[in-house]
Length: 157
Image (cartoon, rainbow, N blue to C red; front, side):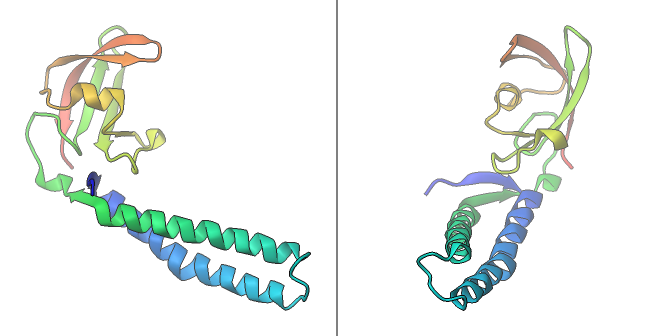
């Protein structure tokens, strides 16, 4: 069974999502199925079929999240430190061409959210900077071509 890294925050969100599915969504869809059954003929009951489809989706999501939950390797980023980039690091990169500064946290694949400045450990930027140190220059193969960045800050928070 392959483990995958996840921050404490990502693990807690996964746990909360699973709890919502089990404690809110599942009982609600069971109730919807019961109400649809009360309407009679199930063969032409659109409400019943929609509720059953929703139930199937919810159950598959629960199985998927439980699998991810059991395979998660939780890493407490607050206990890490140093100038070397590793999983969980919040890094600041300076584009060597434009001098533009960007800050990213390297997180697990399930937690990645570019809008929240969280990039997946398997992303091109993360793969390029993992193992590098503060002040190092890295090249990243981006969709628009190769770009060079300098690592100007490494934090673990």
